[in-house]
Image 1 (tube, rainbow, N blue to C red):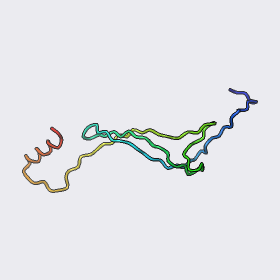
Image 2: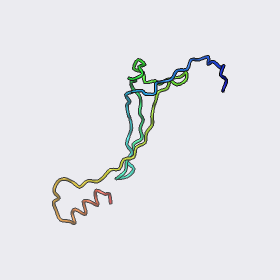
Image 3: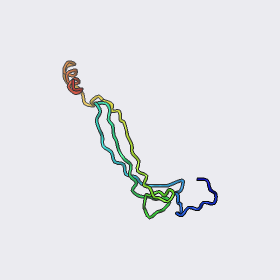
Image 4: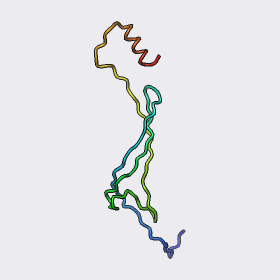
Length: 104
């Protein structure tokens, strides 16, 4: 709508270009296989600090208030490490143990 004489009946209010908030991140891990893990999660705002709004994390946009809840999806590559302790036994036992740990 491009009318220069239009006056909105509701006052519009916007948040500042820079805001500071404390967020809480919550997710749960799903093991895809032995080497990969998927962690879906969410970031929830707890406290708004800059652009003071009585600790409320709400952001104003037009004539409404919004909470900046963010979803996330992380993929994590897990690397297998050699054990730090000394290996005892013969090489056949070590191969058998490695096959057992790999689930073969």
